[in-house]
Length: 124
Length: 107
Image 1 (spheres, rainbow over the protein chains, first blue to last red):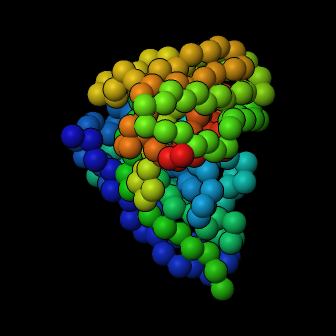
Image 2 (cartoon, rainbow over the protein chains, first blue to last red):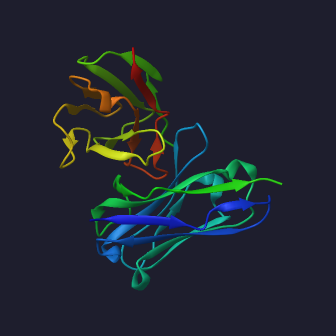
């Protein structure tokens, strides 16, 4: 049974950093691209970042986080990360980690399994 | 970036009704369109991928159709567990983009 558990969220001041983790189980992480998707309170879904399968050579980001966020993976630890720097109030959201539907891809498939999310609140 | 526009943004329906939700893409996304269901306080759940392929384990009451720029999700015989928010997503091109969501509530 595929499971994803996010952690690392919390309340942080503007301009500070936070690192989210997504621990996975029930599938072979290295075979799948992985996504981070966020949802601001009461709002819709916004894709944030994707990392390709295997060694994660290819990454993609939504424009608003380019240069500030970095997605990475440690297949040996079955974990995906999202390093978030220079946070702003607009980054306040529930951050979901999700597994790509396709295997061995750059991440151009829909997310099929999702975690329950970790809440990031950026406020002074 | 490809903009995804869902309509309506909300609708009210009764048990047993059939509802249709539309998603329009700002450019051709071929058939790379997925639909998700999200219930309050829960993560989204993938229902349909590749426009019309129903994910294993999802009831056949959910169906999708379309191509290019216009897509539709149909939910037949609406039941209490189907009242939720539905999201479309294009995965043809990065950045991946979602529609604004359609809230289906009880009339």
